[in-house]
Length: 186
Image (cartoon, rainbow, N blue to C red; front, side, top):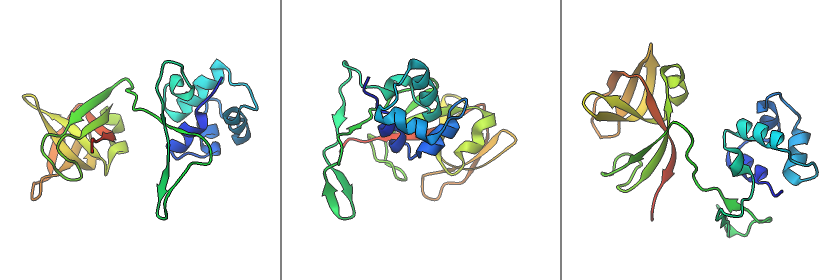
């Protein structure tokens, strides 16, 4: 079975040790390395453990015949573009339970008109995970606040809208959605 464990791990900026420690129960970096390189057989159990550690679906860790992958042609850095040393592919965005979509209609902050954002819905117990991130928060009558979460206290959130000169909003909300991915046509 061809796996994409290494691609997903590197895409998330994690080391072998970090993935090993996130596994339940924890394992060693060497074991994760062997599973990545194929020197150890990847069972369904291992695939599920590693997927949970990487916070992805197990299907994202294997090459599937009915999924079209986008091969990486170049790695662009400060010295220009170079070909990857090993074949690699881009991971297509995959929705997970609780994801919400946000479409930007008018440019604001770092976002352009037409941008599509994938956001993860969080309950009050997880609001702290989104501090200094862009969030969407529900308001009465089908309206929403969108901006940078600057603080949270006792279930309330403080959001700084992206509109220049706008005042900070303090809201008591049942959930927020933190932006996780930007999709932009060029």
